[in-house]
Length: 230
Image (cartoon, rainbow, N blue to C red; front, side):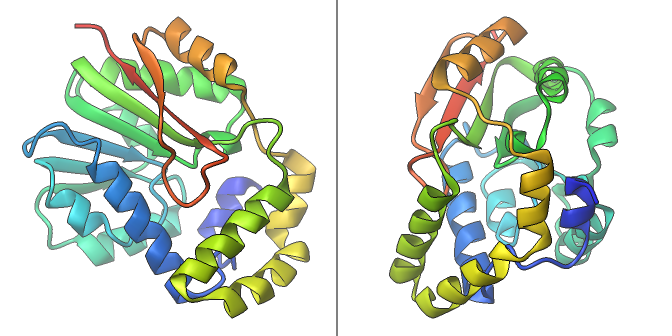
């Protein structure tokens, strides 16, 4: 099983429907905060189930939702098919988008599942697709010194605030015996120090590269912004 297979099938990464709803609501709010104008063309690369994408679409001119898992893409099309300014695409279809056509690219909680070679290739693709002055936001980057225990404690704090603490406690037990835990042990998750991700983005052609508040509930992970030079 690969990470793509995991996300394409049934999984219990969200401990309850409330957890999933609050998670995607928060990500949508954070993403909207980076949209530069009401007519902006936005790519959410690695969007997952994007339950609140309708709200994101309402804040921009065109929204591309890119998801590698075919089953998730079908769910997105069923959920958002009536929205004329939303297009659900595969990673391969992102490569076919017009050059210099995007104002904003967001990759949230994605790069931990990619090799460095895959990430560098995506940096190059995104740079070509961005308009001059367009922005790339890479969110939820995992530093090497953040452990699964830290992630678990942040989930429990989020659950306490969101009213699903009991489900979170049970979910952590399930995760210990889940395919996610096995895949994480087998493949690991890619981690980056702040200087490493800044250097990679700068080498790819983004300038300046700055750190900003992380997307989602875990402040121990990192978000970076890079701009395509005009």
